[in-house]
Length: 248
Image (cartoon, rainbow, N blue to C red; front, top):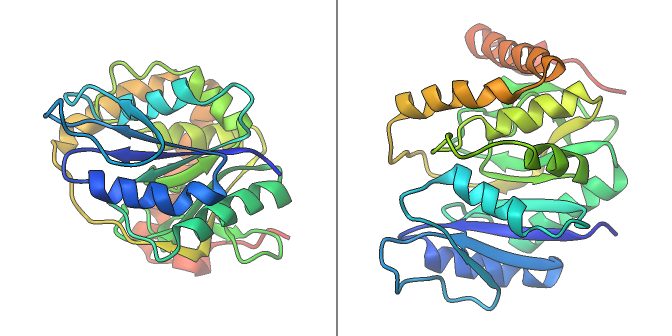
């Protein structure tokens, strides 16, 4: 069974939710950590797990980098959950993630079906994943996802210091995946609800992402271009599942 470390991302207003998720996933995770920030230095989530405090002036990129820094070198899987999400069965989600990576070792990225994401399944679908219910996708978003050891190694090689909001982190692990003949999947049987909101300038976040993506290697950049073009085609054409091919 591959080892799995669950990281829950929390910030002001989300700490109670983060603590509840930590309790729900404790029994099915090898390790649980909450990576959090808060403007009040006395405020923190109340949970029986590792607490990793980060600068409140920083956002997703810094918190994701903290996950990588605190993940043991021999860990097989990294699972990230943002605390503003809801799921009817968090323990089942962790179990499904671990099972998918175990049964299909070439899965580098796994994600549940997430509502209110800029990358809905109808716009990211590439095809079915062999004869499983999982779907091969061009994007998973960075809300709830797990990474294999190979993807973790790639993400550790990046500089996150100038990418304040963390946009593009998901594009790097997606581009890496397909550049290395690995797979990224969404499991529609596992559903997560996510609020549709941003507390910062999307224009600035996108500009920082473009600079961040300069760290892609040539083969990764080709995959990024192809994957993003596929999403654009499905979004603009409305082709949806009709535009996706099976994998068998």
